[in-house]
Image (cartoon, rainbow, N blue to C red):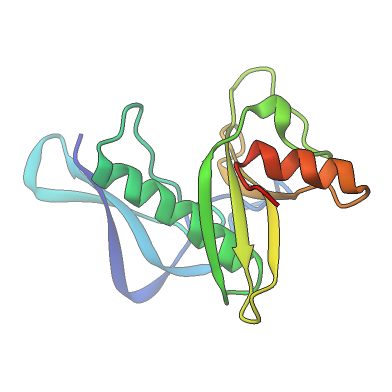
Length: 162
């Protein structure tokens, strides 16, 4: 299936649900996931999603598709932190390594990624971006900050030396 990202001219309501489970998401968005309708090149199914809900993923992505997946992850992380800065995706995170207060869903395997967020002043925050499959939205779980050893262990998990 040919799936891609569209930039919309006029902001549209997000098709996602509110994180409190009560009604639709209230955000407007100019981003949409799109796919060709029933294999017809002239018809598109367009689904507008805000930064909290947008995630395009494939079971075995090509390098180009992986780049789009990582863009969706970075888009969530940067917007979660106020829309400024940058995010670097280090790779998949096993769900049993996601920091608390994450609780695994018994019915679905969530998708999680180690990420470093850098604000405009260069300050870094390490954490895990988790796409909750059952709820269809992203959540951010910061790396532990309590002890030097827990920070060091988390940095080692994502492949950072310091």
